Amino acid sequence: MNAVLEISGLQKTYRSRKGVRRALDGFDMVVEAGQVHGFLGPNGSGKTTTLRTLLGLIRPNGGRMALFGQEVPAHLPAVAGQVGAIVESPQFFGNFSAFDTLALLADAGGVSRRRVTAVLELVGLRDRAKERVRTYSLGMKQRLAVASALLKEPRLLILDEPANGLDPGGIREMRTLMRNLAESGMTVLLSSHILGEIQLICDQVTIISAGKRVAAGSVESVLASHASNAVKVRLEPGVDLIGAAAVLRAKGAEVTLEGEHFVVGNAPNPAQITRILAEQEIYVSELTPVAADLESVFLELTGTAPVEGQNRQVDQTAMAPAQGGWGQ
Image 1 (cartoon, rainbow, N blue to C red):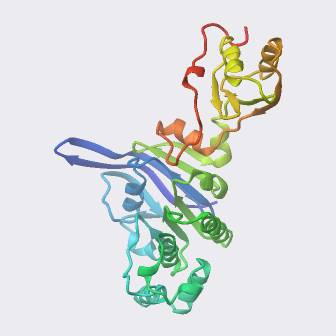
Image 2: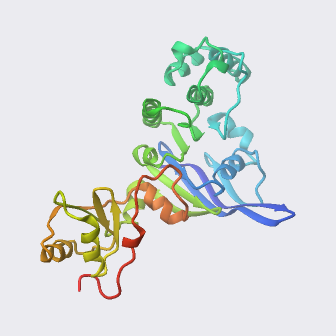
Image 3: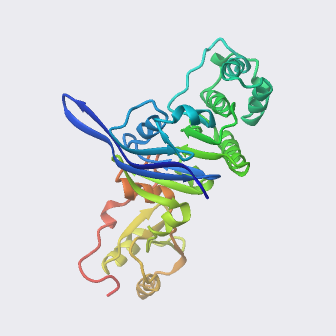
């Protein structure tokens, strides 16, 4: 596949009274045609700076950028019409309806008004198109923003947090829309904090931290490269989980209590778990490998706390392994 977007060694430095801050420090990214490509990073990692630089809104200090094989920002006027983008929170005139808003943008961009009706249908706003934007929820405004980015039928669609404010049904609809656009030949670059959605929808991902790329590739390859030896363990009803965890800790296991089960984080040979517990007449009812997910990989690579509420209840006293070899 051909690269729609190429970034190599991108640098952006800000100077202030507090000193020099490197927002981008030699960042690299490649997005292939026809992909839904996830762009991930914690707040302050350089995601929005990258997108704004790519679109000519910020001048970089160094590096190379290209869209459709054309160097930007030098050739940005030649390729800008092939790019639809939403970066940060879009703003609209509250007294305008969605239809009037898009019609105004269509007229300014030389787009047929028939396209306005089509994009309103695509994002699920057709039945609310005549209502004033000020009456819209945050999620509806996000849909309107996506519609505005789709007006020119771009080859590359850049979306920064498009699911912000959407309910679960709206998120599912947005996911379907992104996949349908990619299947039609459009390339989608998607920045989002909803990591479960990124894992479901994206073909490839790039993860940025402190202005540098820390991972890139297919979702499957990124997850596979961070596979763990963790195992979920569930015991027979009524068994003391804390006592069972202490038995395993005494053998060197790293145990995390999670509600009605626990996870052993260092279990290259899960059979050891059943053997050690059975010796104490504690019997296992479930033993399941814990597959890496994008959230856990993201947290490991960026060293950040979860961006969404984490519901794991951790018994810190049961985490540290005892001295000595595991399973001895």
